[in-house]
Length: 134
Image (cartoon, rainbow, N blue to C red; front, side):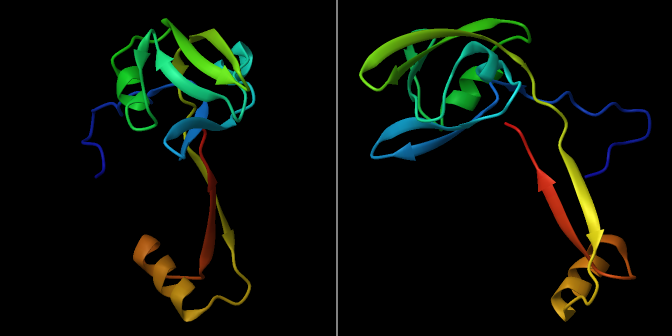
């Protein structure tokens, strides 16, 4: 829903700058955003996340544990990289804002036109293209 006049949008969530995935009951780093706190600290795609500040965590629990922290706080992420246990300190930051790009479609399909009209009211169809760093 739109923000009421005069109210500020909530700040972006705190972030390590990674995407996680579950694989065979393990929580793995799926990707690390370039320039993110995790990237600067040395976390790598493929690292198995075991714990945050000594407490076992999972892909589901990790965002909740991060939300309990403060911006600028350093957390210790325990990971297995191959067979080596690493404890990596990461300073939490706010996630960068979500950005999107709309581009016109030369010959929109009826579905594209309907989606466009539901978003903006009427006119030529556009195709969304967006990315998000987590």
